[in-house]
Length: 113
Length: 108
Image (cartoon, rainbow over all chains, first blue to last red):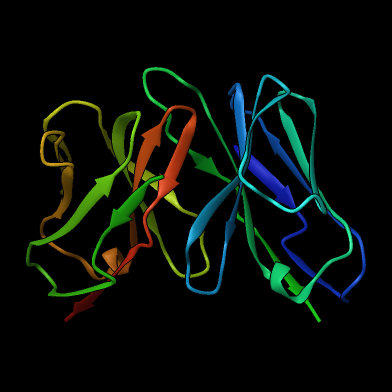
């Protein structure tokens, strides 16, 4: 029944490693997003996909690469992890009409040591 | 660019009414949303204002004035479970941009 599910919930890794976070939504929404929430709880948009096509890339380092195999999935791969990447990453989905209301996954807490 | 301003913290008493304000500066503005986030949880959608005026959903109401680039979230009959962070967010083109959040503390 989970609307937006992302895995893993926790991710602890060392600097320099590569990791992936997976996200799936069963709401039939066309648009999916990745947001990063830092320790000060600031929610910053990273990427947005609409029907598998990238529509927003918010000056995110090239080490971050989203992939959308279909409109129900949006995965995030991160290369060469850095300490500053430690944050909670939220996947979200929305439909565009009548207005976009984001449905968030439960988040992935990434800790880079 | 765009910016949203909201108070970092607000404290209120259980049973009371509290208003959380949000001012924004952005081009291509479509609407203002509000989200609630409990500690350790995910943000959840509360309300959306695309037109000027008041939208009411149970104990929560949200207001928008496009001419003033201003909105607020009004929470009535506060309950302890309302202790959370509240984010205003603007819809700009295909983006939803969040403010820095207001931490609401509720005293018994």
